[in-house]
Image (cartoon, rainbow, N blue to C red; front, side, top):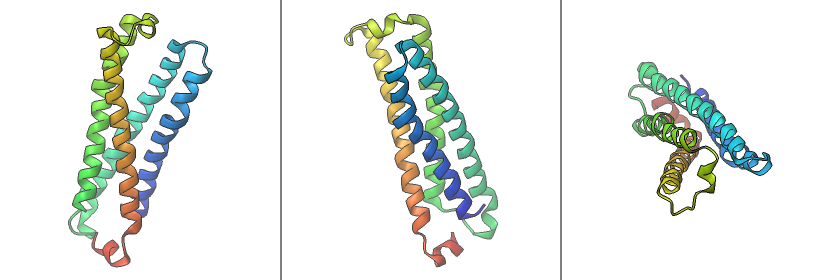
Length: 160
């Protein structure tokens, strides 16, 4: 798979994560009348973003490993970065988001009314922070990879 296609996939992935993080999530909590409704919208969209990211990551990893005979060895840094991005989204989807969903299901509307010092609310806030960190890592890694791929010189492109 060519560099331009990898750039396009990474750009799509970055765009989806950015729109979610900077537009959808803040807008949902700003305009929906109940926090529970906003959380439901954000959870649903985040789940889709996580699945899209995992799929794009698998496609990129597959392409880096399978189509390497034309390029020689796959670019190690790109391979590691995409693997870490994919793993972080798997962790986000199947561990972090799962815990957040369970807490929302168990405590419903009362979760938002708990004091931040309450152990249940503190646990929820910590899981939410993990989610933010994982998404932030993916956004930064995607920006870095896009910049790296875009900067490659013509001679590096032939060898990569």
